[in-house]
Image (cartoon, rainbow, N blue to C red; front, side, top):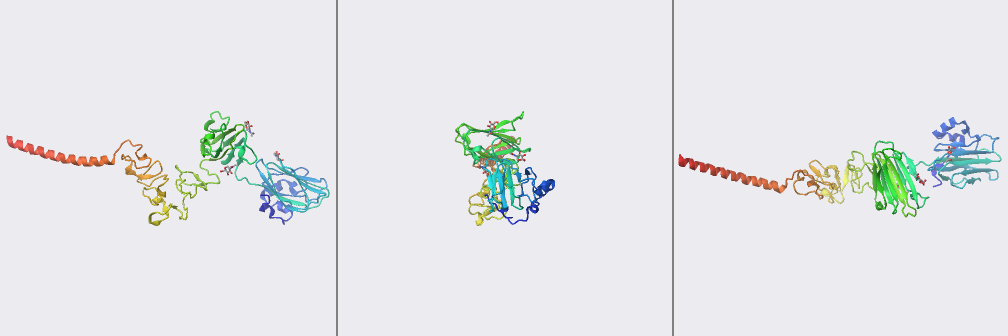
Amino acid sequence: MGARQPLRAERRAPPCLVLVGLLLGVIQAAESNPSRTAVCPGYPDVRREPQGQICSPSGRVMTSSSCSWVIVGGPDDIIYIGFQHFFLSCGSEMLIIRAPNQPSRKLCGYTTPESIRVKGGNVTLTYSWKFWARNRFQLKYEREPKTQPVVSCNRTLDDFYGVIYSPAFSSDSHLGAAHCQWVLDAHDSRPLTLRFTVLNLDIGDSLRVYDGVPGDPLLPHLLRNLDYTSNNKIVSVDSPSSRAWVVYQAVPGTEGRGFNATYHVQGFCVPWDFPCGGDSGEGAMCYSTVERCDGNWDCANGADEDGCHGCPPGQYPCGGRGIGGAICYSATDRCNYQTFCADAADERRCYSCQPGNFRCRDGRCIYESWVCDGQADCVDTSDEADCSYILPRKVVTAAVIGSLVCGLLLVIALGCTCRLYALRSHDFG
Ligand SMILES: *[C@@H]1O[C@H](CO)[C@@H](O)[C@H](O)[C@H]1NC(C)=O
Ligand SMILES: *[C@@H]1O[C@H](CO)[C@@H](O)[C@H](O)[C@H]1NC(C)=O
Ligand SMILES: *[C@@H]1O[C@H](CO)[C@@H](O)[C@H](O)[C@H]1NC(C)=O
């Protein structure tokens, strides 16, 4: 990790003063702060830019024999320092790099030191010399862009998405009693979804998710209380207010590592997922790399299965062959109660059916005329579930035959009546 390319690439760079202007942020800072011309300012030169350059004083400095710089870093920031030029005579010059929770590094000599990676907090550099000479060292620093807001115990987060996990999940912590809470407030009107991807709780450990934030008079109210019985499951919790409060308590001597969770505002995919696009309906709003081309429609519009396994865009793969040996099927072949693929991939996980079809609750489609006909056609019998009337197919047939018979009988009866009437009228006539 130490020797990153971008930092080492500019070893034969022009003098520092010119280079300082390379980055826009640095230029602005230089304009607003004349001391940046590297005449040692006599107080620490505070660097807040995400990246920049530091070099030994270039002007003749009589008043001071040491200079210091502070690269400001937050508790979660990682700061890289890469040397571009280094030429300090060990007897009379020294560069000291200090960072919290780390031994300070004292550097001198004529070989360029390895890059340095510092995690958490401000980094202070102090250059001291006995005999001043120009162009002694030049280094570049860069604050590692945060790939995702990662968070440890007792934090408030206001991002649209992020990751939270129990302390035992971070590399530098151990199992043990813990009491942590996270307040998530996306400042959005959409609900917030928390997804616990790893749950490893011991008996007695508790993990509670509340809607709202602490101190809210109406909220928070408990949404979910998780314990060890939820281990090894993926649990999603939605917070309608777009604010959630997560309280984790691990008992002393716990064997559980706790949890790992992601959260995001609904309708917003975390950066490592992909949006389904379109109206999601019952389907997912986002799909992950694992869900892409796994043969399961996760998105209602099939975006996660579109063009997979050699199918052109707009077509979906059959498992095995389909009608006419085709290996792909199109959207119109889907969910119409006519199996196109040998493995019926085109009839599984239907979020909607083709017109004239009814959607069973298990996501299959049947002909609409088979609904409420007294015969279950959906595997889960949902086509006969909510029928205010029942018109069995057999009864219809029976009724038709019955009415024909009745009609015939009526004709005979009428015939008889007429005949009788004719006879009677003849008798008395
Ligand atoms: C880091 O330095 C800045 C600027 O000097 C200062 O405001 C801040 O409090 C420092 N942070 C820590 C953790 O010392
Ligand atoms: C927690 O889950 C996120 C997203 O799935 C993953 O990127 C991260 O590495 C996990 N963190 C730990 C500590 O396991
Ligand atoms: C987090 O806050 C709780 C309650 O405010 C406190 O008891 C606990 O010690 C804190 N945990 C850490 C690791 O600071």
